[in-house]
Amino acid sequence: MDKLQERAAAFKRLMNYKYNIKLGRKNQLYEFTIDFQKNDFFHLIGLQKLIDLRFLKRSAEHIFNECLKGNITYSMIAKSQYFNELGYRFEYFNQLESILDSNNLIFKCNKNSMQIYSRIAADYMLQHKKEDLLFYLFTAQRNKANTQFCKSFFENSTTDYSRGQTRLTLLYKEKVNIKTEERQIQYDRLTANKKDKPNIK
Image 1 (cartoon, rainbow, N blue to C red):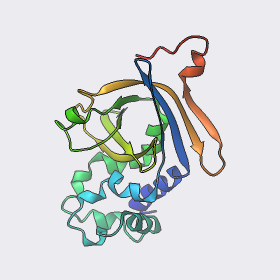
Image 2: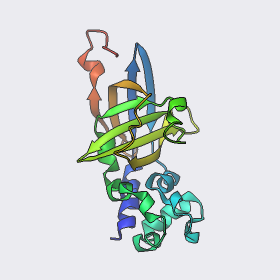
Image 3: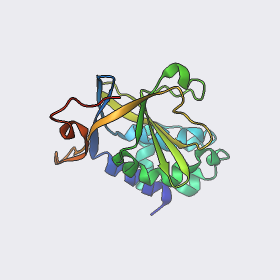
């Protein structure tokens, strides 16, 4: 299977799930769901950076479908003079689900301090270390309340995007299969502290 098609297929599998997450800090609860839609793929894998490829100037959903069918291939996008700007995100994109399954640090984005490093407008940021690389996953609110989508994913081991951000404590995380409604609890600090008030830092 083509390398780009593999990544589109990995994202399609992720579309079968949603993550219900509860975070806390100083007795304040932050609760939201992360879900996945076809039009998220385009920006998440970084195809918007390949501005010299005319065949990418279609709707994000159309591009995803074409990648999934193998009509847009790795060799086609690799011809872009900007392809290197995708960095490690392309090679590690297939591991996005495992990154979301992990219980790594989650920060609430302070939009004023974030502007120092990036123009990304996001609500939450997940920082994940993979081997010697440091990855960042940013989420933002979808149209409906309490639902987030993955907006940006990239590697940057030279800039610490967590500086100036508010670190939140993970209290609860579950992965839900949308089709079967099967629920997998991946982290549950609330039940562990059932008899006591959760220690929210």
